[in-house]
Image (cartoon, rainbow over all chains, first blue to last red; front, side):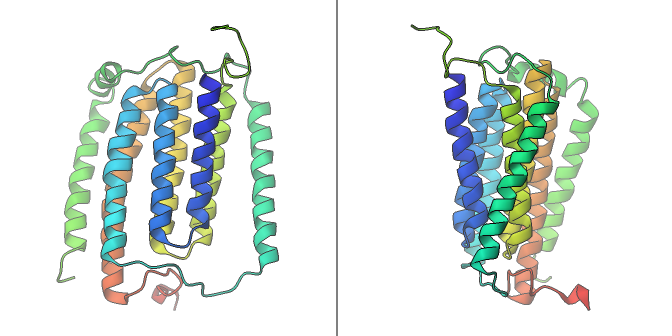
Length: 165
Length: 110
């Protein structure tokens, strides 16, 4: 079942990622990105990342993408207008070369990785308890620094998006 | 046969996850380079961050440690901060230039 679920959701993720790059309208790209994030959340769950799968759905697909869609609607962004024309031949050649490059990368990864047992659902579970315990002991300082970063980002966003700028 | 090892019962090799991560990252780079709309370019960056998160979680599984989860959590936090500031910058650029095409925002070039 693990392999079947992996194949289905990896396929959805790759399809949505290709769609993100190919579509010219930003709202179509945004919806494709939400598809990628949702299927990646399923894969995180499969790898035992319960907390990170929930955070992926809530923070990424929920908060960040809503922000993106708001900005697209606010700016009334339409389809992209091309400033220079690329011939059809170059387009297909580029796609072919990208596919060849990705094939090469996957061959290298396959060859370089030592043989391991592989992923089976349920062998490892990083529950919210484990993540929280480690986050508030070993990683306490980075966590606190992160809160300062968020504060700076909020103030910066408000200053930049003010009316008078 | 509930537990017979077959094509769909076998464990997934770890390299598949890493290959998926590499593919998503490469597609993000392609979108970053080829798209002209600044919002789509920004979304390609988010795609790259997601691909890296998948690698983190995969290695976290392999080493049976939650450290990778915490790193990808921090990546999410930084991505949220980056999205807030970046979209505010896009709003300001649009207010001053009335365009979203990155080719037309080129006054730094001259």
